[in-house]
Image 1 (cartoon, rainbow, N blue to C red):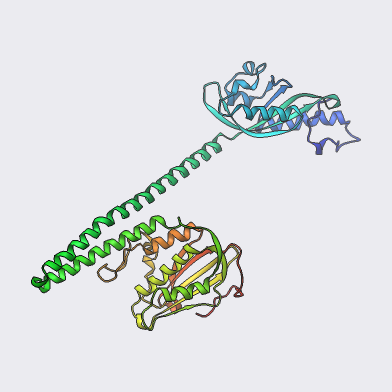
Image 2 (image 1 turned 90 degrees about the horizontal axis):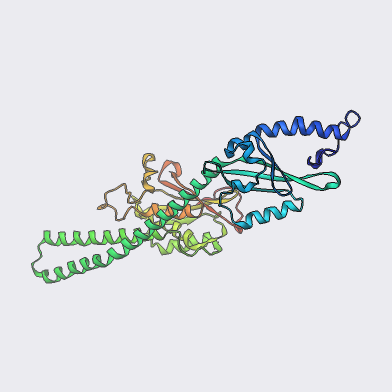
Length: 398
């Protein structure tokens, strides 16, 4: 009788009446299983003690051992030392019970090189379902494993590099602020000592020096904020974003006549409050700072519910940003105007971008309403959204 190692779905003879069960198993095993597997897989057959009785050509090629060296040996000849003893103990315990086993194994070829195989071991059953050996079918996955290891290493290197950069930014900004305060104090003392003899030009230069010191201090503050962006409290809570916008509209102290309006579609969602607050506050603050007619300027904050995220849009009616500069402004220390005209470090949008991307979102710029001003769009994962404002996929009028 032919050993029964066919899949259960083919143990019933589909050609009954034309072939006996034994004839079917013989034809299937020899003409189909063996020929197909032998062309596409690495095959070994062992007895119950694991002694190799058969090794196909693919096995010989990959292991670099001759058939004579493999037959009569066991698979310890291929042991690379990579896997712990328990790995093989668990494997042999399962297959000794007649169970199938599948896993990835790193083997050592005869020349000392390593290769990986995706291995399936199935029991070979004889009469009365007696276990008489094992068939091991393997696929060479060395290329895939090498790629996985390279990606893992690159991810570790990138993580370490980012941590080192953030640490450097933190230390640099923190340590540089102390001497900077000393310079500012020294300028004030010089002004006091020379107050009676300061000329117009000298006073102007002293004021310019103080403004440069304040700008550098602001830059260091923003550099520190950038290094910390997304590293704070990430605990989720219900955030009413319409209420949040109303609070920020008071906090940013807009100039008289400047309007900040939250749309009715702003939702209540479960998220980390601190980073979302920082993003919205920075974007509203940017819109005010760069507005060309703040006495009657407007900012609108709206939201659109998408399947997995909320798309927030903050639109102003200021001067806007030309399309050719809309990617550049997300870089560090990037401004479109001389710093003498607009106070700022050029870090605002870089911080916002980092915060948004840490949450798994995206940020981009488009023209504002009717081609005037600027719209800043960003997506934010909404977790379990509380649809208290009836988001229906449309923007509300601001």
